[in-house]
Each structure stands twice: as C-alpha cells, then as structure tokens.
Length: 288
Figure 1 (cartoon, rainbow, N blue to C red):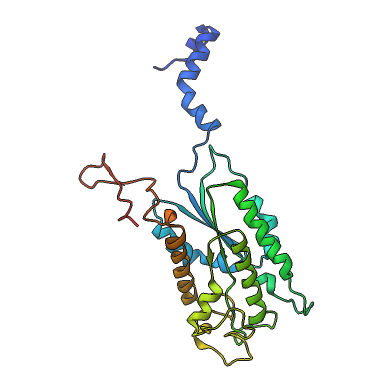
Figure 2: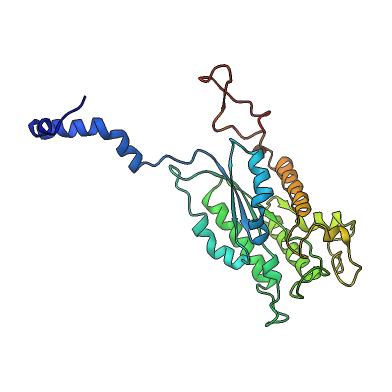
C-alpha cells in the first residue's frame, strides 16, 4: 500500500517505525548482512608460473569444477617465497564464517625466483635455501591456522633447461635443491605433493635418483629436447608443460584428496530440467 507524505505526518512514531521496518526490512538486511559467496574456492598461489595458468590449468580446473567451485589465481610474477609470505594475509585473510567463501584447497608453488642468482650478486640466490624452506613452512602453517577444512598442496619448482635459459642465474642443480626442500616441507607437514620437477624429468626420459647432482637440463649433459619442449625459455612452462603439470595435479586430487574431486564435490546450483524449468536436476557424478 502506498503512503503519501501527508500520511507520514499523521502517523505516531511507533506506527512510523513499524511501517519503515516492514517496508524496508529486506533492503536493510542486505546492507548489514551481505550474502556469502556460495561457491567454495580452490586457490592457485605462486609466482609467474602460477600467474600464467589463467589460460590453461586454471581454465581446465574451472571447467571440471563448473557449478562446484571457483578457481582463483593468485600468481605474482617475479615473487619469491618471502614476498609471497608477506603478501599472504592480504590475499587470504582470516575467514569470516558468515561472509567468506569456504576455501577447500590451496596449491602453493614457489622456488624458481628464490633460486635465481642476480648477476650483480653472483653466488647469492635471492632467497637462501634455508630461508626458502622456512618460508614455505610458514606459508603452510598460516593456511592451516585459518581453516581446519582447507587442504594445502605443495608443488615443486620445475626442472629447467640450461640450454634455453637467457641467463646464467639458474642452474639445473640449484633449482633441484629447492625442489628437494619443497618435498621436505610436504613430508614434515604430511601434505600432498605435486612433484612438477620429477614429472618433467621423467618426461625427459630420466629414471635415475632425485639425489643425482647432474640431471637432464644440465649443460654438463647434452641438450634434452623432450625437457626443452615443456618450457618456453628454459624455465616458464609451454602448453605441453602445463598439460604434464595438470595431469599431476589431477592425479594428486583423485588419489589423495578424493573428497575434493569434482565427482565428489556437490553441485552448488543445479541445472534446470529442459521439460520443467521449475525442476532442478543434480547428477554429481555425471556433471563433471
């Protein structure tokens, strides 16, 4: 019922308050209680290798998890684990249960920039190995502290091809040490691990020990064309490299985090029935 300005003047205060509450209650609730994000999140957190996932792994995951989860890319080109640790509270703050989306899974992918030795400081990586190990541990501890439900997965930095690198700031042996440190943190915290380094080495035809000091990509060996095909510049991933990494990501989810596989995560908003728009149909195992 419409009430004109003159009618408001004739109402006593109690009636006026009741009228305003009745008419504008739902608008008021929307202002003071914002609707929570219904879709849970899967976060990709790392450096430029993660940032460049927008057209491949992020998109492929979003296709698999359509109607189930949002895939969020938090990759920052040039960042080290130290910078990532400092930035983390700003991009993944403590969760508010009423308004924050539920973070189901967070992948952590650092190491390449940490291992890099700038030409002005030869022999000194941007982040020393011991500090890298500490930073990754602190990132894990922070993520686990804000949500008991969140699963954290570490990814080792990729093997590199020294023949294709435009600089001498990275070596195959040095980045392998940062991959080993990532494995150590995953083991200490009993976390799933996506071993990108090992997967790339296997793709190159290598089947030796991870402890070997001379690995494919090292200039002390001949050029490995298979490894080079996974990288665009000796470090950053090619389309084929992202395909290999994606296979490893899915293998870890399906093997160690089955509750988070797309077939086991519930559909947030179901499909409408083509025969009856009022009906909603959810087939968790067939909609992936």
